[in-house]
Structures are given as C-alpha cells and as structure tokens.
Image (cartoon, rainbow, N blue to C red; front, side):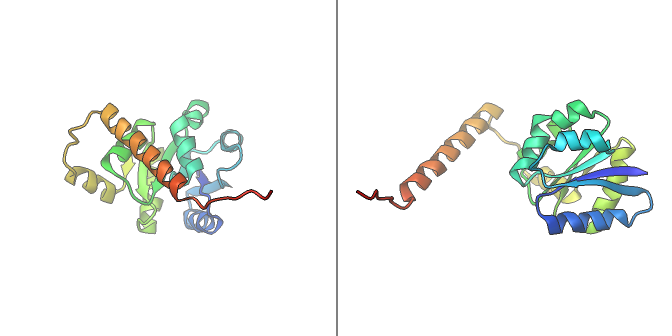
Length: 172
C-alpha cells in the first residue's frame, strides 16, 4: 500500500485529490494538510511514502525548498504540483530533491499514475512541463544574474505598491 500525504491549502481541491487517489486499490491517503501547521511533524507521525505538495501556495514552496521534510523523512518522495512553471523553476524544484513535478491542470489519471512511479524510485515530470523546458532556449544569464534580476523586479514591485497605496491620514 502506497501511503500519501496531501499538502494543498484549498480544502475543496485537497478533498478532490484525496478522493481521486483513494479510489486506487494500492494508494492510501494517510494525511491531508493545508500547510499552515507543522507539516513536517505531521509527516513524521504518519510516515508517508509520497508527499504531494502544492508549491503555488507560499507554504508549499517553502516546505519543499527548506528541505526539512527530506531531511527528516529521506524515504518520502516529493511530488510537487504547480499551475505553471518556467524551465528555471522546474530545474530549481528538481534540485530541491523533488522526485516529480506535475501540473495542477494535468488530467487526473496523470497524478494516479505518477505516484506509484515515485515509489518505484523513478522520477516523474509532467510531459507538458518537460516539453516546455525542451522548447525553451538556453538562458544566456548566469544563475547569479537571474537572481539579481528577480530581486530587482521584486523591489520594483514593492516600490510601486508603496507608491500606489492609499494615503492614510491621522486624526488630530
């Protein structure tokens, strides 16, 4: 029996994933979480074979990137879900020791077929993401140059946000 932990912040979506996976004879959803509590402690308590993590929520990506789950449960394979990705983000997610990456827009059977592959020690990358990465040209920028551009863009967005924030007046 394949034991699965679902980490998805939307309760309805999480329930749909649990129902889908639970229909399989060899898959058991042992825990569901919204990512706001101590997910690592919950995972250690239920000892899943696979953690299906929505990384589009801030908590999900943070959990995947920090690597605590991997450090505490090295036998647990991570299948990261995301709505879309870039070749750089795909590489970053695979670099954090994710065993697989799947689109949240993938057909349901893709999730059902991906989970057992991870348990067998195989990697699973959503074909749509793989094709997009193959079609993308090589990035001429170094990783540091990309990081500097991201930081600059983030600061620019924050500055715009501060400039367009409504004025607050103080009562005398």
